[in-house]
Amino acid sequence: MKPINIDELQASIGKVQPGAGSESKEKISALIENMSKKGEAMGKIALPSMEGLQFVNLDEIIYCESQDNYTQFFLTDGKRIMVSKTIKHFEELLDPNSFFRVHRSNIINLKYIDKYVKGEGGYVVMKKGERIPVSRRRKDAFLQLFHYQ
Image (cartoon, rainbow, N blue to C red; front, side, top):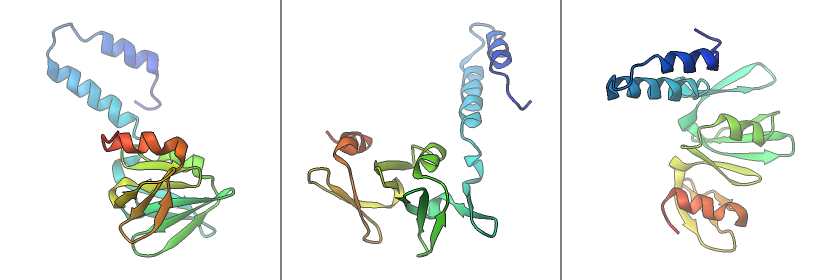
């Protein structure tokens, strides 16, 4: 039951008999993975606006751009949503398997990358033609995502 007490969870896991089969281990792994997803099961994110909350499908986010203490979201339908939270907040919230912070000012949805253009840091071209710079510091980690190095 929520809230989850880590000590109780570990004690429960410890009660599983050794050799109880890989099925139990798989279920435990799936449970831990699901608990760590921070509500992404719905595939949506709540973006606070002046009127309240705007719910956006994660698949609709092409990229995010930092503008001081604000973050602007660029969506597949051409809409832009300005949110009064920092990009760091969203970097911690978004799934690192789908989103990557390529620059101090940008987080991109990996699903919408069209190509990467080499350079000092280089830049990515998104499906709709947007050019997003890749910082020198993050270039290697970005390329490793695609097993390119």
